[in-house]
Image (tube, rainbow, N blue to C red; front, top):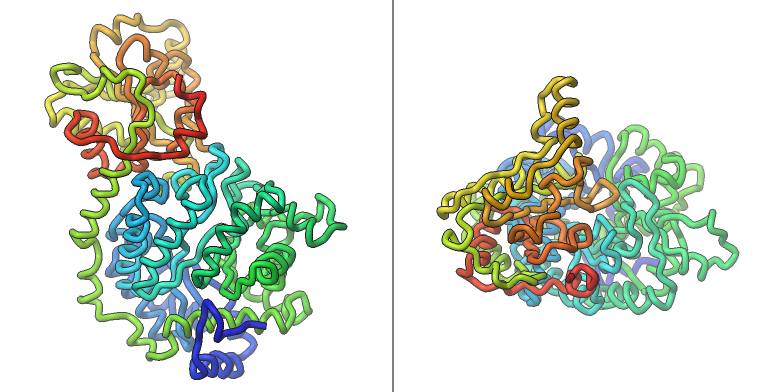
Length: 587
């Protein structure tokens, strides 16, 4: 049974009565609709009110847009919804997860590299202020995965690190900060990512820890969050075979299911063993970690019956809504589980005070709200984080730092990227490589800079015959080493490797072996490698003697990186993952 007076809801009698009376007054269609979190395809009033009237959705998680547009969208939703809405954003790195013009503060790995939990609190606080301003009341953050496998392409920058105690401490600080603005955090991704090296967006990716290992890591972490009143979690499409077989000893390997549809994980482990009383939302349900486990018509009711309360995103609204309804009518989804899910969903809405005001008063006035977006003091915190986080991870040639126009007047800037991925392009933008920004900023500081043009750059827009000629020449012969050493004093390699949504997170090396894309020339010319995304590029370039981990390619971040390379400020960051996961790269 759901105890709405207990943590995390802590409702009084009046709020409990609202929950129960609201459920009692719902039609069957309204009850089923409350289970869905919609990803809107547009922000028009016609579309938004249509989704509300046809599918009676309980929540939304939208794609960020300009703050003014998001405010209008959320105001329409709250004003026209019969039952107040949960409105979620992905504030993983700042208010930019709620509105595109919000403040980017820093990825969790960047925050952790400062070594100071106050910045985790600031990340939550700033995220909360800006997300609440545009009408959000729920956030799919913090990410509480524990980074135990550097090959995992999902966790990477999106985690506090590999140490359980650090992850818990940082997560609690974030949680405190965002809750100050009345936003419910949803920690993710239960029962724990960062162990397998595959990407649950695209593949099966279990958590392989034993029950004892899981208890000492993820179990300790989640219990600490639950004890602190965490109101919601997102369940990943991640199996946990050890605990599934613990609760069901007769289970075979073929019976193992992702947590989303596993009663052993979402009911027996989460609810019964750990005592979690809050809301559980699925991760996005178009991910192959889930869709590869069964027919979608079965997965919908199975997820709620297994212990989830909310289903994240329609595929086709008519199909998904009808399949959930049919699953309930056929008994795949029991009355008991439907009622429990509704109690928790409405319980969290009451916990947030959404029941206490009419819908048209749930957002603050637009003019006042927009004044809270991208405040100068928020940007100042982001710059402070960058100064404290950027790390000189490897420095085997200390004589190369600091750089200057006297020491290295001629610099070749070389871009390094990942294999093309629509998901990565969406996350980082499809614009120029940050190597171009570095080149321009170095020129402004008085350096003579060339930006390396790769073979792939040269063939863009060329005819097939021209492509064959250019690439054929690349194999036919190589330039003399003196072409490099006579023309440049230093090489700055800029790696912008983003792995999410492409199964791996590794540099993409062209087949033209020996070209300057890959830093083979570290003994020929001073070479500095800067990563503006993944912290895990050293395994593919262990020969590099000087390596800086900078976490992102924001304009202000690049300015601070160059200041540190020039010795105008010190390197302060301490990315523990780099230091201990890759001992063999310090050669």
